[in-house]
Image 1 (cartoon, helix red, strand yellow):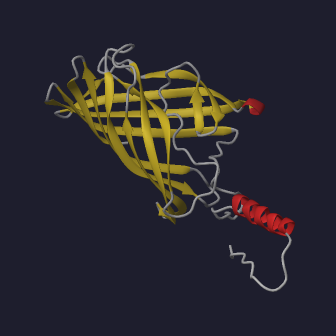
Image 2 (cartoon, helix red, strand yellow):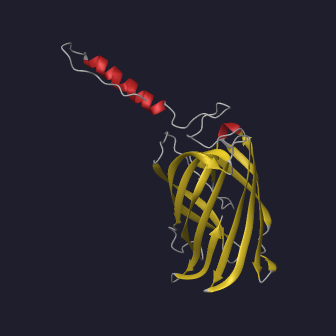
Image 3 (cartoon, rainbow, N blue to C red):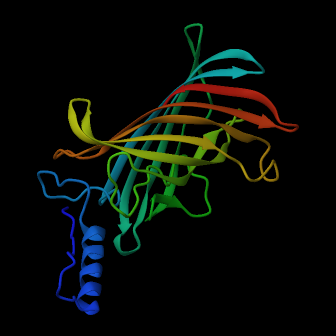
Length: 257
């Protein structure tokens, strides 16, 4: 966008004209999109568009250490299938299927958490959210701000993860996440907008409601595809550990997601 300059001269410019020019420039710099349009003319940037049907698969491959000893490699998939049931409310309903196992010494051991979970989520600013439930799905992630951003810009937003504890139960794991827009690029031989992120878990309950706290951090990259197929892909590395009173780390998980 070019700059607007007002040159001083012998003629005096009325203050009303100055105000009009000022607000016109302010309006244009607010509504002009930063992200490009793809071949279909779809504007990318302000929000993720989940559409009428949404599906994704999250895979975890984590090395597990308990009481300081290596237990094996934990592999788990979370397959999410959602349908837009109430469009005016942005309400999605569907199921999450969990498949997991622990491999050690060439042997596969079932974790006892393979199941399907009915979910009911609403699309709000920041992404999908669950109300009053702990669902096996990460919500408010990824988050794209309502305002346009330029290459190198960063922003922060809190999300909610759900982590399986050593007892097979789900525990809420809120996290702080910081994003940085890297600009257009390629991922898996496809054109994409690339966003770098890093996050850290936090827990404000201090053992009041749960037997464990989840701590840790992670980082990775989001690729928002701009071709006709659309969608997005996330790659990340994560380290998390479970803490119990009096702040003892008794279980660690490290790997890729």
